[in-house]
Image (spheres, rainbow, N blue to C red):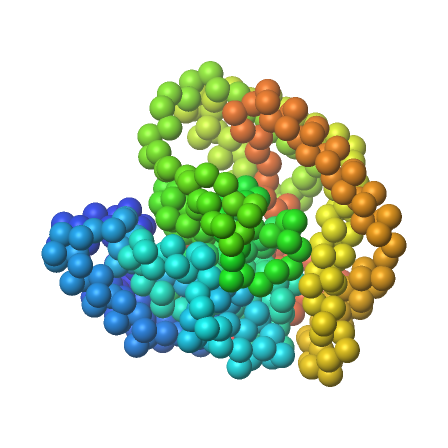
Length: 408
């Protein structure tokens, strides 16, 4: 019964809650019991908050009984990546260095979800300092719920894994360079890397301040829209934020709208993944969209990203360089990259930003001709937790509900 309930979308659960046929307390207990039963094998949660969640669910239930329905998220349990501050609750940034860190205020996203009536249930696993890989010296390797010898990708590893295995109703991840779309793809759920500035980053760990974004991971695209509506909008504490977002469930007629397809830049070596992408294109074509192949300009995308991310990350974490605690950092190569980038000439960073602006201008020009441009998220499936030195394995294939019965 719990499985059938927990695997429903926000839209489905919200309808039952507002109709009075589902109790937020009942729903929260179902998710808590599932998390307590399964997460020892999935390892997607750093801090489970059962007492906090039940109190929030009870408050939501009282409000809903009085007819005070705040939003479609009212009474829905969720988790956040453990780089978002939560008042009075540990926020570790995925590192043993900050394993006992307890903020005295909430992040903007948590504030917004609280106003929407969401039920904070868990702080979710992540790679150390959102470093991209799924490793951390604080917690064990997060496992893919579809196949426990596979990763969930990173760095929002717990957000992807917990949502996919229905331990939470939805989750919040962060992305600097693939940390929402990667885990969403690896775990077979919907994720949304939001436009820079769409969601306030106040109270969120900085990795690269000109690249960091926050966004939802959920069971459907509709659910992502419902969550984004709750968390997006202006915030004077983050001056890059923009206007509120209003989600429209009905996009209107799509016949004749143009979609650009990027094929050449993304090698998809696995037959199964090629079929998945082809199947998605078939659905869009039958809906009435018109396709046109698109080629990206030849630019040093990865080089510009890496220099920007490492320079900004190295600057933010520089106070740790002379702190003995940084020796506890799991990834020595990451530490070395930050240290090296922090010593680069300013001219290198500025040159990268000039090229970056060229890329932005070209992208805007290309997007002006299409309603959307799409590509495969990943060329291959989820990698092995402990990959052999030279042996490529077949990827996990999420074509059914996740199984968590295999031993770790």
